[in-house]
Structure formats: structure tokens, C-alpha cells
Length: 353
Image 1 (cartoon, rainbow, N blue to C red):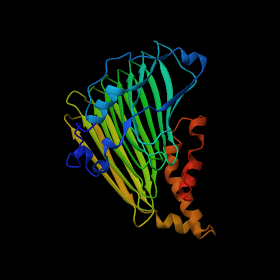
Image 2: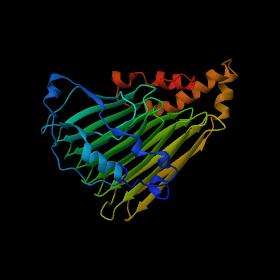
Image 3: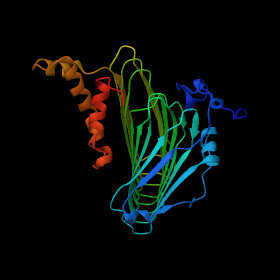
Image 4: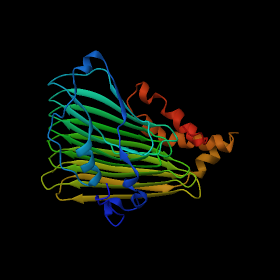
């Protein structure tokens, strides 16, 4: 891998990142152990080969994924409703490897599917995973996708989410990031058909020396499209988080609506969070807003709880769980995400998974 040129923090999309710490020569090509759990009905939509032409890569990591992809493809038929979620679990077992899982979700016209993709590794595994998910929602299709990062504290993740929505489609894209050493996700939606709708939601919590890094794009390329982004994170100890996001309303995307919100809690003096929202609007007659906050727990909320006899450490836990409640309540309700509140609570108590 010595001939590869890695990006640097001088590039805006990699600003604030830890990319300078990565030595790709220290990893050998490997694979994740992937398990697909689904109903007999859903097994018919799992394909073993690519069903769409791969899109061009934006950087060296996407290029490597295209070259070495470990592919899972899910393709619905027109009007097909997949009633039970498809759960895909990728496990990194070996240290010193780099793996490239790729998921294609191709939802045909007026079809519906929910997919949960989990990434796990043991605490002692020092490896790199470069996942890509490619979502295509045709006219009136409805796709729900949930990514859950439960990686061990020594594993790196550099991931990509790409979602394209056709006319009157609906895409709900959720990310839960609790694990990993440096965990990065570049999440982009492009609304190409009139009336397309996208929702992007993320919950992230970093402790010790972890870092979570998110770069998002809401790209409106058709009239009357709608996007709503809500990312909430917390950092404690000496952990870090980065969020940079862009809303782009193209010239032909009149009467579109786009909203972007990023909220961050810093729970320790040594913790650090960066939030940079952006707007790029090329037409009139649209509704757009962006908001971001970085700060400690609201002292009035803490005081209210402590004044009623709740111990300080319990009060902090309740405030943080309440902060994340808005995100957790938006998540689909099924077993793969049912224990998220407990996982967040364990991190607040300093218990590593």
C-alpha cells in the first residue's frame, strides 16, 4: 500500500481529523465476518453480486473499497414490502487487517425495506474497517437504514454513506456511534426527484481518548424536496468529536425545505467538540435553517435534580440520557436498537464494552 497517497488535514473535508496518525502500510488486506439475519421472505432479495454500476470514488478510501469490496446487496422488487428488518453484523476478529465491507440497498418503485448494519470487534483488535453503504430509493420507495458502531477501543473506522432519492421517496438514515478509537463517517444524501424526503439522525458518545468525526451533505437537486438532520453527541475525559455539515440547495430545487441541527455536550474539562454547519443556496423560495451548540450540561437542570435529593453522578446521567432521548425516540423499535439507552448509561459510568 506504500504507493497510495493519503489525504491530509490541509483538505477541508479532513480538517480536524486524525488522518495524520494512520499508517496504511501497517495493515494487511483482510475481511470481516459478515452474518445476515432476515426472514425467509427477505432472503429472496439478498444478491451475491453487484446489481448497479459502482459510483466513482471521492477519495483513496472509497477507491480501495471499490477495488476490494466485500459485498452484500439487497434488491427489492416493485411494490414489495419487506415486513421484518434485515440485520447485518460485521465482526473484525484479527488485528493488523483492513477490511472493506460494502452494502448496496436498491429499493425499487413503491417498495419498503428496513436494514440494520452492525460493526463489532473485541477490545484488543487493532484494525481498520472502511465500510460503504450505497442506498438507491426509486420513486415512492421507503428505506430505513440504521448503522450501529460497537467497535472495540483499538479499532479505526473510516466509513461512507451515500443515499439517492427519487420522486416522492422517503429515506431515514440513522447512525449510532459508541465504539472505535477514531470513527469517521461521511454521510451524504442527494434528493434527485421532486418530493423526495430524507431524514438523517445520529447519536454519538466518546470517552477516554476516542474521537467521532462526521461530515454530512444534504444535496437538494429537485423541487419540493425535504431534508431534516439531527446529530447529537457527547464527549468526556479527553475524547473529541467533529461535525461539519453542508446544506446545498441547487438552482432548480425551488420550494425545498432543509434543516440541520447539531448539539454537543462536553462532560469533562479535557473533552473537545467542534461543530461547523454551512449553507449553500442557489435559488429563492426555499426554507432552510442550521443550528449548532457545544457546551457543558445545563446547570439549572443539574441543580433541579440535585435539589430533589438525586446524587450528582445520577443527576448527570439523567440529564445526558434526556439529551439523547430525542434521538433514541426517533429510532425504529426493534431488538437491535432496544438496548441503546443501557449502552449509553454504561459509558457514562465508565464501563467499556
